[in-house]
Image (cartoon, rainbow, N blue to C red):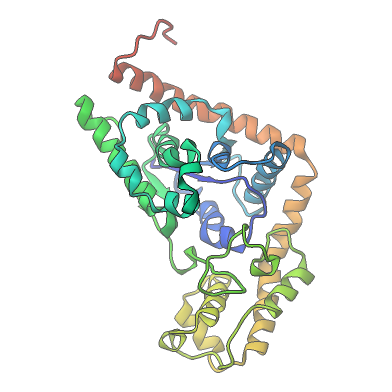
Length: 335
């Protein structure tokens, strides 16, 4: 069976964009693939994190995945730092990847900004650790959003160069799984910017823990223009806020945007927002309630993470042993 790996940073506040762009798809993949889903806490600390908040966020994100339908009995769920094989393989990949490849990574440029000289070395080699996350399990597929496609290309480059350098056909050239129109959900306050947990305004996003009143208030206050909704996709051009809300509506109904416009084309925004609110509450309400219930049982969450880490290590340990042999490291303990 093909094997999937994907990770999510445990920095708290899972929101609608995380759900529609990734988590919902993860739940749908679990019957057709062997899936490994990871709270990437090692990636998170490339930017400083408060230790107490990081622990809480790791558990919160785990609860969010399970509440959204990612079954720990069907999938491996764990936090990255519990499997040191990721870090070990990442060092080997640090010696395989080229500086020129890392210099082209746009996400480092965006995160480091004008403070590049003060950025952590971890942020710079972040993509090599991401490659190790994937290839430690010889994953064949990775579900990615548009903003992660470049990192997956680097993973493919590293796999091919490792294979070439050592004259082996060992690591797979991992294929991306890119889903449809809901992969990029935009801010409710600015349709030109991606929905983000780092946005200063809580009204820019719908959090998975938001209750019905909060969801209704945020959709009611979402930025729109003055024109009625069009009946065809061409009518959304130059209207980023309308396009975003239609995209959210279509994704929540699990239909294409053109089909959504056949249903609501010609509507004024106030009546469309009422319809969108009811839909969002019906879909997200049960997830939020279950997430809150799970967050009240940290012992259970920790047991899921522990069991997942054991299973993950069982898969990655043989890979690391073989990589050590390929590279030429002496192993005195043969297990």
